[in-house]
Image 1 (cartoon, rainbow, N blue to C red):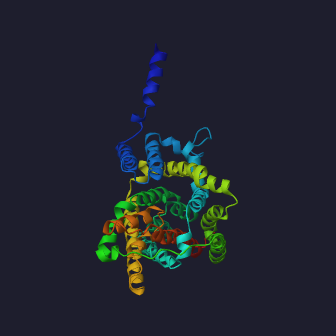
Image 2: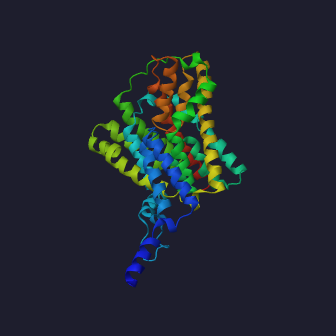
Image 3: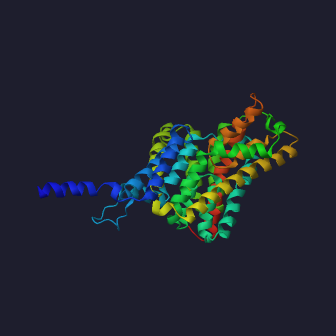
Length: 383
């Protein structure tokens, strides 16, 4: 009888109810809220579903992120091993390869001026850097936080790992991916505030056709130029361009399909759940996290505003040939930001098609954010 009682007692005591506090409960509620946004509202479900579920798991069963050193039997938790691939920059680089394999760089090649809009949208990164310094973050932590302004989750994870800011990686990654998924909510009010109805209705000329030779040479030339100037960008820019070369060469269709489908989705699952699992109550519910979330929102808003304002400048310089809305796509949320430019433009004129024009700044923004990360690494002597 005593054996049965002891067994039942052990079963009851191992339940999560006896090991968690109200903070874990709050994080579980937040995780369920993110799942609602992903499933009911369809806000980037491919990102939010695994992130939110990882958040849910770690706050019910914290040992799922237990390190080898913390473990009694020398075996870490499942998501700890997933997370190591984030720290080692493996998963962010593979994500970039998948993005390259999925994305048409033709609009950027057809309209090289899009690089300027992508560069302008990076203003939010550097504004956030100085803001983070002012709030008490050290220089490397400020650099890691600031990349959120580019709305680029993989680059945020990559830079945080390279700069040794693994303690902040969870909040940074969750903030970056959250703002990526909330692009349709955050950007339109800023875009409408900074533009007139007439500007939003501007129709742009059709882009010129891009030859196959141009499409093949572009990823090769960009890799050579960017990586010679900033070698530290090679893991991100190199993988982005490799994926695009798979797409455009036409001779490795199997590699392109694998990189853009099976491999991409496997990596998203592993990266998303591991990022979500860094948000245990103990690690996430503190003032540093609140500062990071607020700074990220400000940076993203500044980046969007800078892109739109530069778009207005280009509109004036070209005598009304550039719709300022495409400047908002200069952030790295591909292709969501470009779709938002299209949506807002169509609200002013349903016959206005800005999507392909917006894809140019959008692709430029991905490259620009990677270059910004490489610049920070070069400044701090990190390789």
